[in-house]
Length: 239
Image 1 (cartoon, rainbow, N blue to C red):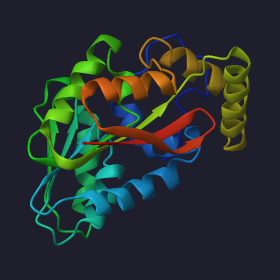
Image 2 (cartoon, one colour):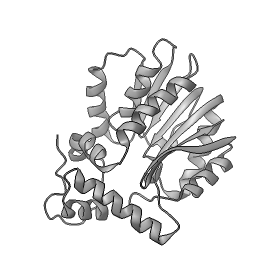
Image 3 (cartoon, rainbow, N blue to C red):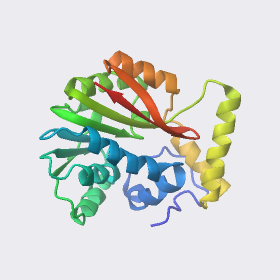
């Protein structure tokens, strides 16, 4: 369904992954995140390269399961298992409906939980697809350290995030380009403004350097960005 959640004047309220968002989330993210389709397809390709036989693959903050599906089709026949974790019952219910219509056979467990409390075990691939930015800043380092501890040797973390820029002029330019992308995909200025206000207190972007430094501190041997479109980037971190 088309995302029109912010098309009328609304009282300011924090963004939440509720029933209304779950219904339109696929349209919302594709019209809001530049390069989303390509980064999602490449998530499947990278997972296919790094998934180890008979290991676990995690999609943390799985929402409607787009990354889960990309991985599921990339690792057929390897004896892997995918665990999709999200704290929104509405998103997981819709995710289960989508997975039930999928033809791939790799088993998927959907778990309703806070990803900050999940133990990662025997994993070869972990995906954080535009999820870390919703975790309180003071809990992000601990989460990444637990992901690193739960990865097999040679395992990878695939991290996609909205980022901010230390240079004010660059930040302004990228913000304007992002808003132009959204207008080109049918969002009005009212929708853009109201969505931005709703996200202000719940989604906290960081600089690319902050992400790389945190990944190093978590123990990853090397980490680097493999894709960026405006103020959205995807990184791979290797154990």
